[in-house]
Image (cartoon, rainbow, N blue to C red; front, top):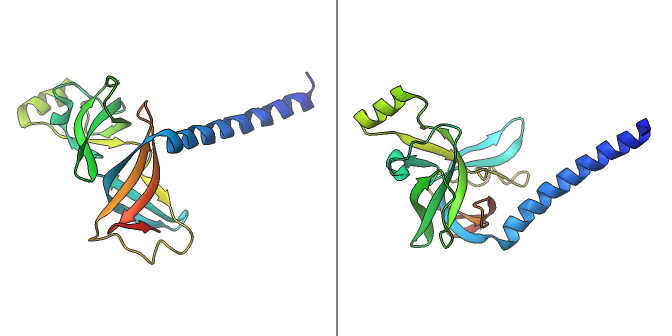
Length: 183
């Protein structure tokens, strides 16, 4: 193989990977089950990245009792089983194994609050547990330039429409603030 052929193959591989990522997200958006999740803004602007919103979902910080005694460590992939409560969906339980069919769930990764050692497990049992902080990959929403500062989420009712596929992968579709599409 010549250097030119290797170079072309390397570029082609990168393009294929990028398209695969896009197609994967599009398949979640088009064929996933739509759910509404309550959100709260964390940070509306970053000088280096421009206007974007970072959200914390109600299902992002869960009491450790949602794990039903299962030992969950930081970095573990977990599945949060959801149930509908009015217009929005809330957490029912957290587990390390993929749930059985006919249950709606979202896949995430434990960022903090999981046990790290026997000492953590002792502390958990003795003092009543902790909160699991779970990241789903849908925490940031980029906003068209200039619209991020006009609108404030603070003290408003905000929900996100999220599409979830059969494997728990999620994609953020829309944001609603006080029942109006935003931005």
